[in-house]
Amino acid sequence: MEKLTVTLGIDIGGTNTDFAFVDISGSCRHKTSVKTLSDTPVEHFVARIHETVDSLLNTADRQYALNGIGIGAANGNAFTGCIENAPNLGWKNAPIVALFQDAFGLPVHLNNDANAAALGEMLFGAARGMKSFILVTLGTGLGCGIVVHGQLLTGNKGHAGEMGHVTVEPNGRPCNCGKTGCLETYASATGIVRTAAQLLSESREDSALRRLPPQGLTGRTIADAAQSGDRIATRAFDLTGAVLGRSLADAVAYLDPEAIVISGGLASAGSVLFDPVREAFEENVCAVHKGNVNILPSGLHPGDAAIVGAAASIWKQK
Amino acid sequence: MEKLTVTLGIDIGGTNTDFAFVDISGSCRHKTSVKTLSDTPVEHFVARIHETVDSLLNTADRQYALNGIGIGAANGNAFTGCIENAPNLGWKNAPIVALFQDAFGLPVHLNNDANAAALGEMLFGAARGMKSFILVTLGTGLGCGIVVHGQLLTGNKGHAGEMGHVTVEPNGRPCNCGKTGCLETYASATGIVRTAAQLLSESREDSALRRLPPQGLTGRTIADAAQSGDRIATRAFDLTGAVLGRSLADAVAYLDPEAIVISGGLASAGSVLFDPVREAFEENVCAVHKGNVNILPSGLHPGDAAIVGAAASIWKQK
Image 1 (tube, each protein chain N blue to C red):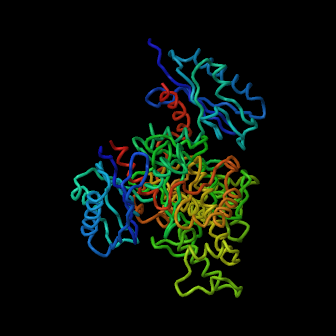
Image 2 (tube, each protein chain N blue to C red):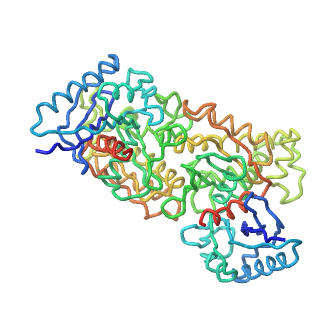
């Protein structure tokens, strides 16, 4: 049986690292997850991935030829090949490309995780065939990847698309980045938890959220409550959507994209999020864009976008 | 004597239309200005330009070969070749490219005026050799041209770079565009006039601005007063610079450019504008950009950037 050429696509997150063998059609094979454990040395992390990949290659029911490794990581910089000061990772300026090249002896390409996800959506997901769009991922933070002229917008030093850190509320909520009032302090899983907690403290209205165990307030539990009609949870989504929709209107003023794709954990809440986002977007966007920019959910399996997009960076380099 | 090949560069403004023969080195020859008179039919406007150009060609001390016409205009759309709903022009959806092609029988290219100015700065001005920068022009409104990957960012429908209409103050000042709180209602010549008028009405402090004749409050007179140390005028520039600097920090979060170029009438105020812009920018920009993004004045003669940039669009098409 002929060997199938695949690329190892890796999505390095603060808690878990997901990876898979990605074939040319964008299918993820043998998708696996390991703990990132970024409090241990990054060399150990690379060695653990290497062991797991070797074991997968040896036990798989067919033979694979690995042609390279594409990595998406929070604060991954395509220009330097390093993960730089990621707030949720213990490693500081980890030379991840060099380490994986040494371990595997293969071409390695690193991207910011949101940029990798944007490539994934462009090639295989909701933005297939588009030349310009904005991808927003709502997880612990807010990630953003921008595609213009059919290409990922990297910026001068690999830092384009930091939409999570535009200011939406001068002197607003403190952000991990050191500033205040950044978009991701409102529009993200942690942002909506802050909003819901504030709403709960400001009223005495009954809510399912009040009966959660300690630490039980999460993007997921707020989404569940909102989908069941809980008024405080719904209000938290309305406020989150209003801030995000207004910021997306600004982003469209800069970039004039074909569409906006929203992915990540919080986006799986569906219409309780998308409805207020779309309403605020239409209210705030310039007349020329009204009704003309689709706001779409991800077109890929949850968690696949960054893996397949990272892998695709290898194909583009060939 | 051999004919010199030049391009007719035209900058169509609400009041005046400036044009010149632009040679390959970016020099403007025989720069001329006519009234735009957009309350008369656009066909008359094109005929007047045609007559003036013919007369210049016939009386010039050397022979020119015109190779095309590049036009910059507020709300000029490169994709449609039309000027679309420009708030300061009487023509609605004027097919300016077709009209000039018919009149001159030459290749014609239309750009938004700020986009044309960005090309001018990239080829011959403050952004020479840069692959990514943001140009902001502060005139009656706020125009913006964005260059990424060495190319003008047009967007999906030719509407990228509408930075004048990002929201800086929800429920803020009404804007000509129909929205409220748009950046250009604060950061532009008309914006600073509104700010100064507000400051004058809120205090009884003495100011040279109080002794101006009716309608005497303009970007120019406020700049003159600020440069003479007038406290209210200085405060108007401080507020204008603070709003603009904060918005530029957001723009840099999206785009990660090498530099920002600020041009237009209000920019000629110099340090009374640039100092507060730079201060607010550094205060609000992400850590990775602090101290790394230059904010520069235009590197061209006032009014030349859009003319030479518009002309350059013709050369690129060849």
